[in-house]
Image (tube, rainbow, N blue to C red):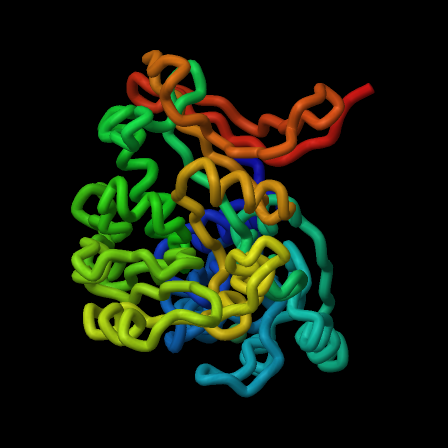
Length: 378
Ligand SMILES: [Zn+2]
């Protein structure tokens, strides 16, 4: 049998990293494989913030076999004295001879330091093997480090005629159980779920992860890490009885200055945390400021936007939507039902919003379209 190639070892490291998809937050998902004489001698992945990094697990498993081995790591090893010590030093001390990395550290403050430490110690380092795949595993961590804002993934459920709810706001359920399980997975991998106050009023959604619906082994750990719920509520209209305020985890209500203290106090007593942000030119919560706050103060990597046409349109207009997951049900809701996006002022074809479609697949009886904002073609 032919020996596995370097790409195959890195693919294994990426597969291990993916096991941390729902649990490493706010840390990145990272995997590591140690290979000696064409044989795997150690492997590991980062499971949870505060626990050992992927490299430490792999070195523990390899023991003395790490001496002279090649390490395949999906991200540049850390160089700082954190809770688990710098992994670059651990690799050097264990006698690893060569390190192959999928990508460098995206944090501009530490990028390249781990690589420099390894090279100074005489370890051979290569960077860039399966880099695209490694980047795709941590879009939120990369976004937070390089853009100072979360990666925003918009999820919407719609009919084949592009409608998300009846005119009354009634929307449950457009899509089937398989699509709803997918939405649970999207929530579980996100640091925060972002919504508008009208969606909370209409749907009274709990916005939580019901881990039992995920069909995953680590359901308990996932259930303990509920994404931060963020309600954009310029006028502070959130009802005190909203279901999301009674759920485990935190609910942040983003608003602007100028509301009476009594209304604030009532919401706080009901369990909400009030976040006062600057207003934009229309007097609404400044969405750029909100995303910056979420990245800087709450360490939000991936934010899942689950909302109605107004906030979805405003986020799209502001260039703040990175990816869309549109679940399309084989049904028609008619012309009086609610559209996907309110995009006021859009009247000419030249103003249309083209999308690049990345993936389309069947999810039960529904379809899931993964897309991102694109450019007009000539
Ligand atoms: Zn580390």
